[in-house]
Length: 515
Image 1 (tube, one colour):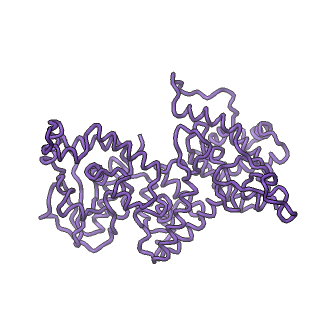
Image 2: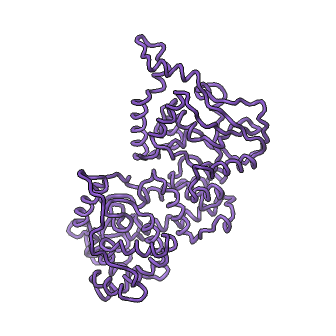
């Protein structure tokens, strides 16, 4: 089930503020009334390094709200209060956000979220929010209906009982004593307990002031949401937001819907996915030649100049991959980044990024264009060989240089032999690639009486790709995000702009290769 984005419900605040708190006289429980009025919710905050509150699906939110209404045991919320009076959530942001989202009727698309994200709430997030609302309203009931139940002309006894429970139960609170450093240390210690933070996200949280991490956060949200770049000048903030929105559009537009029923899909997969932030961070790092040990090797970005530099380099690579920019190769997502079942493959995404970067270093774009159609035929028919290379080196990241080398071997051989099958037959005879085996038997899959989402996607993709739109210059597949209209007879030779003199091409083929 899809994860619900509740990140807007509790605002973030800079955690590195002066504060030393003794919790002796502070409250030890939170009730519903704390969120509907009074002096608690307006001053509730998440640390600015807190991971996004988007790990719960609708089922988990329902279970938590039901547990609260039924008075079941709920783990205590851990808070820290600074000397200005703000309450920071050290542990329990998802629990509090789930409860508040129900009270405020905001599951990622309500008034709080609209104010937080502006006009950048994508359709996928809206759909998940509406589905969540329907499930919660059916299984629990709307919060407003419950609290108003005692005052209706025809009281609903079930709703009234829930209203009674809401007034009786509360969540226990534990407090962290000490200053901001102690509170931050407590946060990281707690969040490495049973439900651990993803290692990539932990690295981002700990390196939150480094330019690549700020850039990744900005891209994920298209420059909206919490401004991790708010310490920079207004001019730099505006530029960060502009670049981030542009890169986000290139990577995640159009929205991926499953089962796949169109070849017009995004290069980055689903935006609302646990893979999104690691994928974007790696995109930023690869675009800027930043290694895995960046947390030790990079300095914090003090004025935003590094963040801007990283974003500009990332945009340059994004342009190259799939856009209408003149430099765009227009790599089709289905060919380069997805499985035949319509599943996004992060490993293939990284391999392709590295391959494109190496093509530029070696000035081999012309060689690639000349054999591109056959190279894409190889990718569509022999992608399992790439998986074998990845398994040999035990991880996608370790396999990157080896896959790139393999791609160059394929490219070189296709210059003299246009049949990908014959090229592969020869390559796997070599000592270097003798561990690769051709797939002769159909891969075993679980077969169900009805079609699954994957099988529906596979049926469509296999049929649609047969008639996929292709570039009239290189004969490679064309994606809707990277279409260029080319003069068959050049303008410089007197060619006119009438339809009979036009052809569909990739931007790079039109503006660079052809010339």
